[in-house]
Length: 210
Image 1 (cartoon, rainbow, N blue to C red):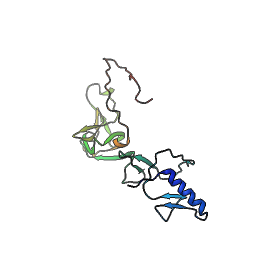
Image 2 (cartoon, rainbow, N blue to C red; image 1 turned 90 degrees about the vertical axis):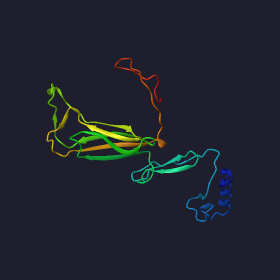
Image 3 (cartoon, one colour; image 1 turned 45 degrees about the vertical axis):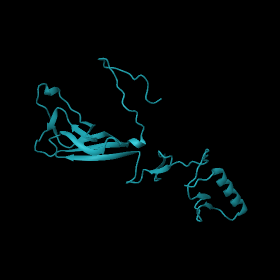
Image 4 (cartoon, rainbow, N blue to C red; image 1 turned 120 degrees about the vertical axis):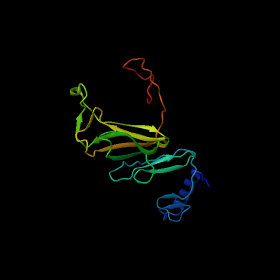
């Protein structure tokens, strides 16, 4: 892989531009420069680069990030590309005809070693009946959804505790929206154990982020 000294490149471009005033664009490694200076090839920069003008993003602009890989190469992360990598993903699951409103274990197949999966929205489309157990008049229920790891993949659980389909023959549908983060593109803090000492309140020894 060829490397170039940035100062030498800029000096070379300056000399060319001053010697040939008619050249509005200069190319290194290319005869078809698209900008004032275009370098077609690898560039090794050991100092700082000052960007004079930063334009604000407008509606319709493509969101692109620059990410440094483990081998120190810099890659473009185009989140508008539907098949490319992204900082996060939103996936909606339509789960139909479970056992009443009870989804005990749905395997998403998403690799837990590569991604983090959370649910942020869920609803069920059937009318529900409160349980007829003792003190049923005091019962109420909110939709419960969560994710857990089993067999190396992320699984989803969904349920309305203490209630079930009013019409037991009805085919119900859960709509569960999930947010998926790539572990390569997010910071992983690991696990923290919190001893509560049989109390209902507690506090962290220090914040994770200052």
